[in-house]
Image (cartoon, rainbow, N blue to C red; front, side):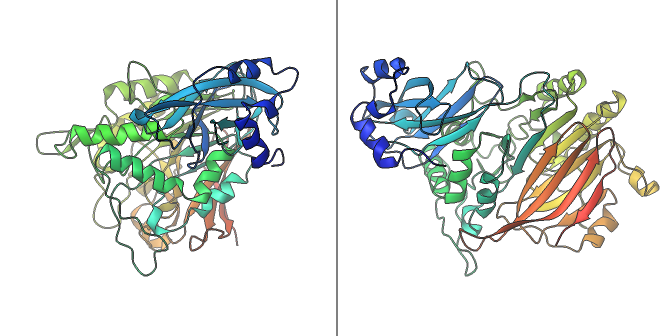
Length: 485
């Protein structure tokens, strides 16, 4: 990206924003005379998120000694920030860890915008964001998704490749951080000894993760959405079990909302689940598969989504007029068994919830339902049915929907031969836990094309390349597979 240099922008900030002005930028000039912009440095990157066709949430963090202060956001149509469309002075302080977040509306659909923050003595990197297509649009889409980015296990090089793509949206499917400390081994390239269990330590953990250049660049260039899994709080937790405590869960949730560019519901502070329309091409349903889990007195799993969220999801799927119904699904829904039974911490521990959801999709005849899944540390494709035994009875059965599991950014998985996995799990169409990376999805009216991309995690500039490609025609659950070099 070309444009003004950081030195020029910094000079403009020191002069109250004069460099950014053009004859039509009277609003910026007025804001530059208002109080509220303090001194502080932007060393944790910039981000945008929760986009709609007319609005985007913008984020950064200002390091300052002031208990309360603020910074100015400038949003423009051009990279040089001369064609300004919006400015905001946003307050911050110690109570929210110096984070700054504001939602800007009145934007044009499916349009690129550029933005920067400035304080009295610093200017952030210039970020880029994109609004989503308008209602009714048949615009094809390009979406990236990933999960499980363990800082100590490797560099986040898949994010560098994703940042270079012409994405409409990026989806983080959980385990954005690993709260637990990790003892570095000889093959691990980085160290992370922070054991997060309170608000201060969760905040430190997010700061540590944002120090990764690949993650910062992905956030700088693409708008994103995020759903959490367990490691944002504690491994394998269920909401109503005694541990972790409500205090710890609240601290983990609060830090996640502070550090990510997501919108807050005023009456439901930590609500994640929502529908994101992407024109007429797709509806994206974000799920929270931790906060509403229930177990019985013996800790036996009962419900994964909770009644309210499940009802919302089923109602949204039935009502959706979009070509593709994408479900951002933090844990695998296929009943995977590697010889020791299903893993209770995934949908495998909640058979009734899975059967109910898939059964309703089948009874309603809802087509083009796709689960985009994280957590497993394995690249997989699974055919889905409310009756998984149908795949054993009929090897040609293709099920009612499809699950694409996007490996992990760095976390290791169960490296097993694909034929061995398929022998015990006949719904599995592909399996590879030996590599790490992310998924790239192209959507149009005719088909969904999913590409699995693997990266070298051993160094920050490691390469990335596609190794599998799947084509799913609209209206079908049968896929074609192309294994790449």
